[in-house]
Amino acid sequence: MLNNKKVFPYLLLAGQIISMMAVIPMFIFGEVWQWAITIAVYCFFMLSITVGYHRLISHKAFKCPQWIHNILMVGGGLPFYGPALVWVANHREHHRYADTAKDPHSPYYRGVLRAYFLQVLSPINFKYVKDLLRKQIYRDQVKYYWHFIIGYVLLLAIIDPFAIVYGFLAPAGLSKLFGGLVFTYSHRGRKAHSDLWVGLITLGEGFHEGHHKKASTHRWHTLDAGGILIEMIDNDKRTQKA
Image (cartoon, rainbow, N blue to C red; front, side):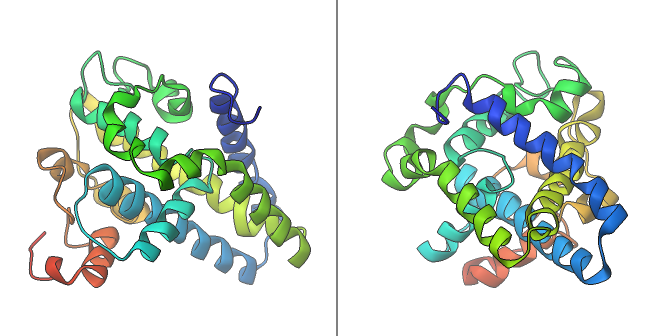
């Protein structure tokens, strides 16, 4: 039932909305040490998206051991972005038709509201992930997607019920609030832009112009945290310039 194609996107959207709202109690009740955990988990979620879902799985921009791939894949799915199959299919279609009427999340053609908040409702064309569909690990992530999220929530609840907020929902919400800027502000005027402040808070995603010029490039700016991490993981990338 949870993986039903008609229900699944709306469950993801509900999770994203709850996560964004969870930022409010963090500002009201969060202590310094809890904010430190929120920021750390936020960085893990964002790096899992920009390094894992985006550069590794979508564009095959670098190589890494399987265990690192698996950690990034799980981390990318936890904040209600959906399984890699779904995210990558949507992203590859975006690159195929970037900033045109066929772009699944163009702020110009789809509207800023849909591009920012409702991207998860975009129809998914799985022809863009035929390579991933052949691999069992990605099909398993779809099958057990909610198991990981529920398991993580239960673990946090055992440690501290409020940890569900500062260790999961708030960082997931921040990743959506900041990450949504890449689909809207960094795609203003029907073209990709590189914005330093967006790039810094999204750990590299906001350096978008260079990425769209050459999607397979692993590092998009000298201050691209995701690219720096990749060079720490993949020795072959250390000598390549941004």
